[in-house]
Image 1 (cartoon, rainbow, N blue to C red):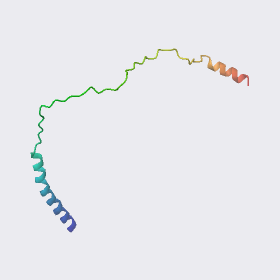
Image 2 (image 1 turned 90 degrees about the vertical axis):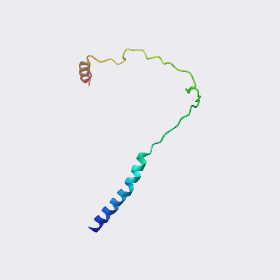
Image 3 (image 1 turned 180 degrees about the horizontal axis):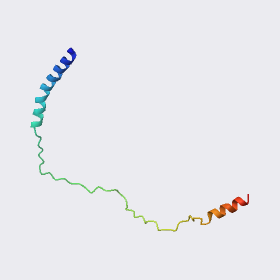
Image 4 (image 1 turned 90 degrees about the horizontal axis):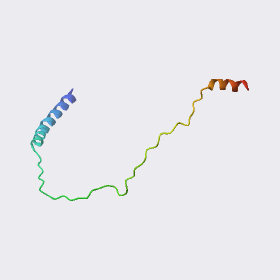
Length: 80
């Protein structure tokens, strides 16, 4: 019981000290003054040539679907 009371006292004291510090920080504002400075620079891009790649043409598939697969299977089984 004593530990709980001591913990509550320490926690309350910490809150009392931290609250004014947080209130002071939120009131301040930071301002930046940018004078008229001339900024010069070059265009940054990769060295080299731009490559254009042609798209592949459409081709017919080399895979042929067997229309008479089952009769061919039966023929191969008969030969065994």
